[in-house]
Image 1 (tube, helix red, strand yellow):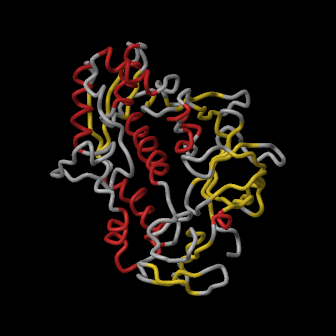
Image 2 (cartoon, rainbow, N blue to C red):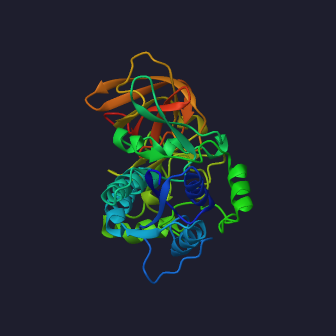
Image 3 (cartoon, rainbow, N blue to C red):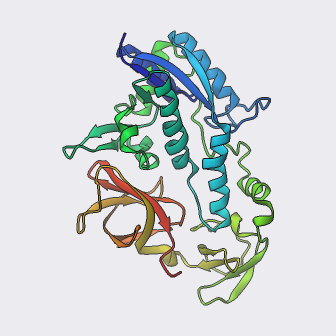
Length: 363
């Protein structure tokens, strides 16, 4: 029997094929589904509940039965609340726009799953993420771009530690989505035609505003002013958690031209409105850095950087400007770099480092 690997199985086609490929390679495979947010009695349909609904548990169990491998459910609901949901709400209250998948990956889908997998004697954990792991000549592990450019998920994996990367397998990183579907169809895997999950899993009805307001409660200040850069009042907003940097629709302002949210200020409960060019910046500050392929920032080194999951890469250099605070100097302006989102720096086709976008010091 080959080395033992625990595969995180959401019930989707990607993780199902990941388990199949590893078994085919000779690994001793165990499937695991994480119970993160859903209630025991809450039957969330797969077309509503994203990757982690209760239907996902059943689908993962069916796949494991079909593949002839064990299946278990790990209950991480309390930890998910602590590391993901509470942080998500706190960031919105502070006027930031978080990416909960990044924290979920770091603490739950990797950190806790690896700890639990190690306790049952597993050598590796694996997931159905579109990325590849590589050990660089400098001895460090990194995540390398998937062959499926449109599905590449390295951006949301930048925060993984060296230990976790050393013990991770990403078997579908060498395939594109069409090939994964074809493998699933050919092998008769039950989830072959299951739709991809979308949006944030723990808000299955997609009512983000309502969810945040319900969870934040008395911490919210309620209505406040829309203002321009000079502080002139333009109108009334419904609460800062209803807005994100770069938002144009749903503002309820009649300005005679397209306007956008350019800043959110929790201290005075204002939302700053500006023109499209006001969203452009060549300097982006960030902290909470995780060094992956590079052990430190290399002054003057040219990186390629992304300021959101769906953005293209932009050339930049970076440096530490004070203890734990870094600045990326882009060679062309990037649009809507929102505090709370991740900035990920790439060296060629792999992640060098990443961090959390912050407001410029002093603002």
